[in-house]
Image 1 (cartoon, rainbow, N blue to C red):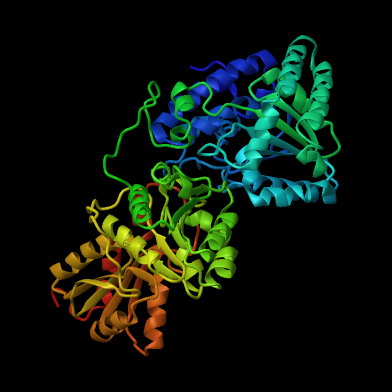
Image 2: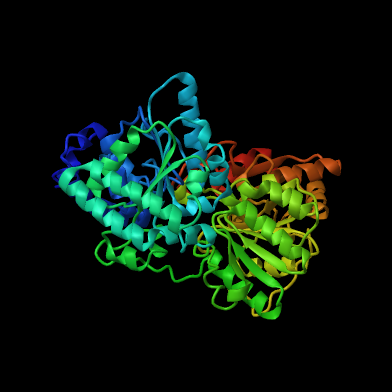
Length: 623
């Protein structure tokens, strides 16, 4: 049993330890993370990198009175361990267990929930300004990774940071988001971190802290800051925005961090602490394979080995299909917003490196960048998770659709994203895209149809969107050559005269099961693979709407404004009155959990649909 971690029931217990004991606590926390996350899966690499930073923050500051804002917040596991949740840690990302991100309803120590990058600075600034307006004196600390500064929102916040009296920003610089960071900002931070003058000065500062305390070290830190202004360039970027810059410091040197936070706590203006950390520190497999160990499923805590699913995921099918399209068309380009691994574009990159673009965590820029390329005759495929594409809605409307540019939005994680929870569920893209003129919206029932939809989108004169789920599909083999689909034309999988089930995407499998159940009770059932959320096949809807007693729509999406709503609108426009049972997610944020269990809980199953449709049918078994 751990000697120190077991005694931590709240941040107050952290303060009872000596600085030397904090180092031993850090070792126990790393072991707890490695063993615990091995059982549940999760973001192990980022959390191993912030152990000392999080301990030092809790040692010096006082949550929940003081507020910690974590950017993305997937690196908040250590924070959870230090705020009374160690006993529940084995439940993280499990049904009814701890959330994998900060969650305000989970703990009073979680001051701000987040799941998307770039939010910490704006939220922290809002808290600090509200504190100033209310006459408070509490502290607000924002912990943001270097990759978050490739996001435009971070710079929008920096543009206003001088409006507050006190704010502490910790720049957690580990050179990684999920993949290696890219662009001028990453190069800028790297230039600071590798400057030989900085290395020399801060090595001296670390030694002075251990021998004499913080004052001498901070004197050295100021010299390092002055050196930066002369060596890195005319004025540090943070200084230009109105923050005092300190660093870079060793983000794993606990004595140094404690003394530095004590100093920063006394400052009466916005400050930034540049801390250099090592993602995956303390776990060799995570150091060797940083992309893999950013976030993954259960693994062996000794070797880091994970179970291989064997079957290709939708993401991998997408990347392989895009590679084939690019092989035959020199105008095809791939764009991602810092997610080459998650979208599987790292499989495309080696084949067409000059036609692969990672723009960093900047979804709005990714879409505008694609629009610009499209005006010059290129065919951009933007691979962005459904939940992250929400951030670029204005660019989709104003810059792509309004100009009718042939950009293809490939929305990974369309539908439920299981263990990641509500910040990552892709449940809104049909609703937020269906009302946009010129745009075609597709959803494949299997892997082969995904390839066909990509080929179809490539041939369109305007924008298209394709949503597909996380993980593996039904295992349908992909044809050697894709075929173009007729726009807005559904696929009738089987005909019927009493009930018609219109299913979209991965709900087709449940539609087939529902049909079999209804047929077992003597009903004639049609099953339609809708294929298109926009345009809906109005002719097919009219045919079965006039013929059948009831229609059923099934979608892995919220009901509000989704595919079922589109079918209702089509029926209304054609003056057809028929009962419609809509199966989809309710008008609420869905918690994290196993997909199958959540579908059962919220009625997205053939059995639940059967119970709802049976009372609407005239012919009932036994009557």
